[in-house]
Length: 424
Image 1 (cartoon, rainbow, N blue to C red):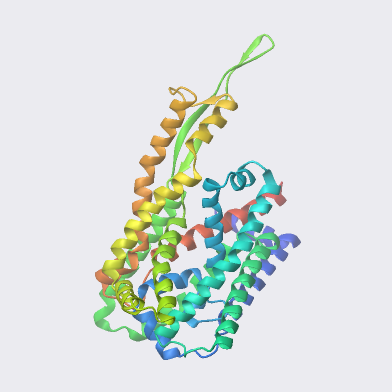
Image 2: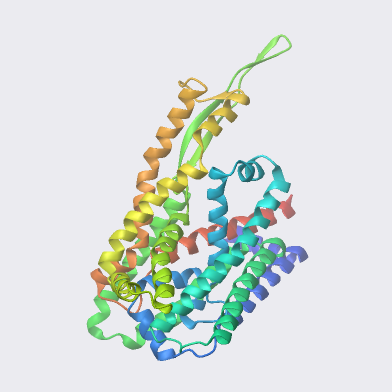
């Protein structure tokens, strides 16, 4: 196994095209980390650190900004607006038939049009998010009061930073290896690990050693669980009808239909975070224009988000609900049953058509429940681990762990596919 691994590494770095793709990927991620270190003007670093220390919710949002939000960098929104726009476009396939036709039926040309619509939608989403964050940060005294010119300049700067990261991610997808947007998020997650470990080492004492050992055990168990669940699937056996070939009766082929346990991936967590963030931004903007009820409501909602048990319970329920919702949106048993019937395939013991649709739908609903509960537990795992270990300086984010594992698995598969292509 070790010899095979070494052989593949030699093949990867010995091939000029793979080597060029890896170099491009490393260069793009280095540029992203450079941009993430450039803050917007007028940031009070002490107030910013206190704000993030008292609000775990915005620490979760910092994951999707690639670490830029914690520094209030020019790329503080990260690729979040683009991810939100992509999700909105997928939801639009339910409402608008022309969007559904472009995404499912028009092949590569339709997919290209779908991506173009997502890019255009990213701009207004980035503008609205930048306005909301700036008003929120002003209300928390993290940045000073901005005049009209300074406000517009900061909005333009933050929006441009988000669009730049979107473009950089697409370049990585095209000229590098793997999904560029996912790799940008992964780079932000991994960049936070050294500082988190160093803070824990300097803040630790002999009395905290059992807590840290317990944390390491939990971290290992969670990592193993995420790897197993990420690859877990329910296989539905599929058979093909026998066909006459001349005077002989050809035996039909047999295969299976894989249904993943985490069918929705990390999208329900993004949904839940977005839904929890919208009231905060709206109330901050209303407070800025001196709406009477907004100031008190904003303080109450900020206190709610600062309480890990209250917002954690709501967060868990939202993740479970959105897992079912997104699975229903993206996986259509009727379309699967129709495609099976058109190709002469069937599930053994189940009639083609309506009964096949009902059978597949029942399987999906049955396996979605454990997947949804697993995602919910990952989402609230920082609060659980803090309560069990008492460690506050080093918190294993289940969301970050899920993203990291899925992106690394996808990247290794893409590299392995490139190597296998050259071998043959």
